[in-house]
Length: 406
Ligand code: AMP
Ligand code: MG
Image (cartoon, rainbow, N blue to C red):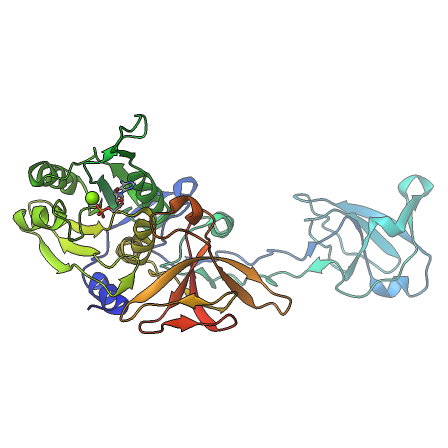
């Protein structure tokens, strides 16, 4: 059976990069940078006060209390242009330029003004450099602050703004269509009949795809019959770079997803992976005239959907955006409780992550009812990876984990 690693290699070799577009910075959250971000100025651009107080020469405060003559004021956006001399102080605010001649800022809490603001009495000594961030101490003009392939997040938008990127080059969002299949499914607004359940996969898939940077469309529900499946697959594929199907990929009599794909002329790259949960995962490509839409056929159990989407479809969507780390990053952790693996297959077990007293990451396997138990799964923040052919791991064993997006 195809290993997870081989499946990921196949996916990455069939995910062509999407075009680059320039967008407004205010629309950039979650997008993948397609250019280097270079500082157009030093940061800070001048020696900057870190406190409200007085700019002084530290040597003037070797004996305290000391009285200094106030010769001016430096406020944020309105610096004092003179040169500070011995025995002088300049009233200064956080974010303001430190005047020439001053080498320290003493905080306002240990000062009091006298003579109607002509003098300041300072009760504590200071040292040169105190409460000053020197010009270029944080960033030097011309240096690269962000690289192509990084995902723009709430922290990185600040850098883009600070260095003048009103517009930014990013990869186009992949267009994703989500198609939930299963005759038992009814829409969320309906009350299920005796043999029916509400469709939840199309919503979780749409949410995970949006987190991966995609523009998502949910298609109408498809029943388990090849004709309507083919129709909805073709309609969805015509509008999407990636079509994500749930259900109908197992060995049941009414599992028609692969039949429908084959009849539409799809090239099936794989249809089984040595994975638990998620063995019957399908990866395929529909032919033109649909613009070579990639297709993921995911097993319908809601937890299998979450695992296989985040392992495979997410990686494809991130690779198409040229993200520098398209797959979920693996981290080391310690098992909080013993777990079972599977022969031949690699297991991904839902877990929560905590740190122990030694600062080690501890992965606590979730108590749950299996891959249909999506309500228990809402508590999981990570997946524990149990390698192929490992039947049992004891508490305390070292494992790899991936964090679940969300
Ligand atoms: P299947 O992969 O079609 O054999 O489905 C496996 C299990 O997942 C069955 O119990 C289905 O009823 C359930 N299932 C399939 N599709 C969905 C969906 N869209 N939302 C919630 N459960 C689903
Ligand atoms: Mg089904």
